[in-house]
Image (tube, rainbow, N blue to C red):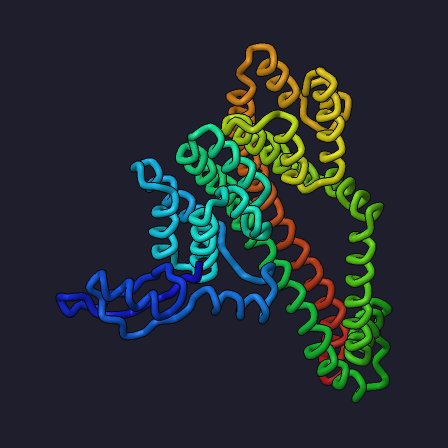
Length: 406
């Protein structure tokens, strides 16, 4: 059924706005008139959404994690207050500030209102609602605990967002420093050194030391072939992306990401934290173990770890434990294996996974803080050495010039 967005006046003369379901615009106006609303403007939101789908791909529509988390929590609150799902979805669609998310919720409401299930309606938007989200909502619908599942989903989304934000914010300063160093060196080689070289050219009797010649030649190469350099870097990035998008290339890159000094350990910890928290959330939500393992393999975002999870899933289907295959893979820390083993034996696997996730979230923050505190002075020292070498290579000939002039 189409959804119409309206603006109008109520019986008190106050401005009101919202959405209404109706077969057509005439039926929408009649429905609003019956509710005491004088319609000033009426738009078919469903038709607008269809037009928008033709203009841009769904993957390009931006919905932040915060928007999704807030929408989920609002819906959970309304359901907990015993409000029917259709009415709750209608209320949320009017409260959500993100226009695209609001339209999606409105369309999901229409689907549910026509007799469809909530999780199947969510599954129509895979770029917005992950398999984890859909599976948990399916479990919640079947068990009658959708409100509790949605609260758990909101908490999970917020925790994942907090972890990502910690890593990004911690790495922001080193990235800014690196970009500053690149621009500083580019400025020295492209603008400053060529000006000084003009002075040297005016005194051909000066014999430049070899290190000054190297710096000057490098500067000349950058000035004359900067377009070639940019093209070469662009070509290398394209080749790297093409290689990384191949199955073997993607697997090799994921393997390297886990072996990089310092950064590799952080990548592994982040992946393990996602694995344990997601698996705990799915199991707590009533999702079967095999289904949960099939979903959680995609959350780690690493082919090497995903293969280990697939092996564990195959073993579970044959009646074995999770801990054994994960231990054999050698990709998961001993603490994780130990806690999973205890959880399986005591029947408190979900609780153990949650504890591991909390511990690793804290470890991620500690490792990232340690990395940034180490990177900053190292980058400053490197920048100082590079600039010092360049200044030294240029200043020695200038000092000789000043002696000749004296």
